[in-house]
Amino acid sequence: MKKRNILYTAVGAMMALTMSSCNDWLDIPVDGQSTSKELFADGDGYRSALHGLYGSMAKPLLYGKELQYGLIDFFSNQYKTAGVPERYFTSVRYTAAANRKFNDPELQPTLDEIFREAYKIVAEANNLIHNINTEADSKFSQGKMERDMILGEALAVRAFIHFDMLRLYAPAPIIDDGGTYLPYIKAFPEIQGQHVTVKAFIDNVIADLEEARKLVKAYDDTPLGISTSVNGKARYYNELEYGLEGANNKERIDAFFMGRGYRFSYWAITALLARVYQYGATFDDARYDLAEACAKEVVDCEVTTSSHTFTPFKNEDFEFKWAEDPEVMKGIRMESNLIFGVYNYNQVRDAGVENNFPKEPGMTTGQMFIADVEGQEIFKTVSGTDEKENDIRYTRLLFTPRGTEVKLSMKWYVSLVNTTSSSGASTNNPTLSVLPLIRTSEMRYIMAETAARRGKLDKAYEILNGMREARNLGTSPLTVASTFDAFQKDLVREAQREWISEGQLFYLYKRLNAPVKRADGSVAPFSKEETILPLPVNEKL
Image (cartoon, rainbow, N blue to C red):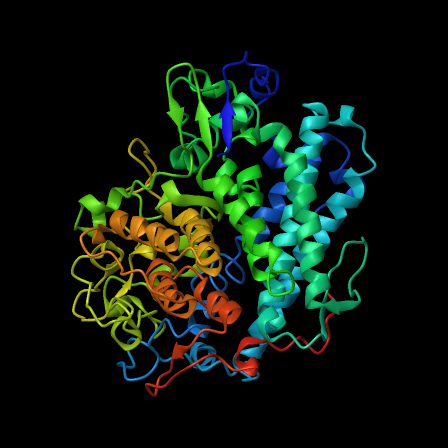
């Protein structure tokens, strides 16, 4: 079990209690508004450049929509596109996505834009990395710790973006043919790198992430670093826990060291490593164990003080369980099990959320993202038991627009009232500004799958049934299967419920080569052509 003991003096205070203005670092020009020489003239420029990377990730073309709950979830058959009234859905582009017709002229331009936008972030990260590698520690207000933190996070961004491009534009390892598909670009400036094999690509991702988590650990192991990651409210709303570093004088903390849930902290990088190790385990079976170790380190983390023990990622406190009215639900982002997400204050406006998840049909322009609950039978167990009346992922995390009988994801419901936290005061739907990318539920699935692969099916089901209990299914545990194939079916069914409108199911189906229910009722894995997006004709950025 990974433990953090903070019964030492507040050495971290020297970094945490800087007297500079909390938001000065956000005001540095970014995104082409200045030259690298101007931007990196002082340490604050590096802070701003890093902030720009995360901001670019949150754009609607990437994790603000299309790779969050948009195109990526049409790829996985999550949404209904046929047999619904035209006032609900008429989009040709999303229909092509649902049929995985990647070369459709209405769809392919968007796929090309996604590729280019992603590799632009890689280029921006490489620019930051290239410059910071020559800088002295003294250039940064908190010296080596801050320099290493920025460098580590930039490496993690580079790895994260590359990895998702691999999951989209190359075959999964389970059907890999040894071909070269994508470039892993590390140099700056470089706009078109040499393509490498899937195995070599994954090795590059792992190398970047292993280095990155060593670099950021120097901050995340300090009293303040622990305090800002100790629970969901600390990670996303800066509500620091009483008795931990900074809670009594939060106004004096440099804002750059807050909001760790929106950044690649040690925990987010370790969780991402678990994801990558699992994805590449086809090439090296030992990587399943490495994935499990990383996942377990996150989930089992403990922090001890003289009076209390904190478990930052173990407890799942779902506030929305206690309210039926969507307008007053809290915690629909499930911050307690969210490890990493990016942020866009204007998410509702920028992504047109109400067009896709409207409260009534008149609010959409034919692009309603209707969960195909019945067609995919996701709230029936593999053996056929219907659980939707009890599972909170149905009763609380889906809603029905007025005047319809369809189901939409509650995770993207635009409330008229504040739903950020117990003490927040904003009215700009701040909860919807949190764009979830890595959850502890995935870490638990990784632990369960590895146990099942190692023949420990009792342990695997203990994990799944523990999760089900937290989701109001404690009285109906899954029966322990006797084979891995049977376990995999139960795992996929749980993931189908967990990841509605969160952009993860397509990757799961692809990694496992899992059978998927088709529109005609047949069940079969996606073909190779259905899982590999075409590269732009011109890859130059």
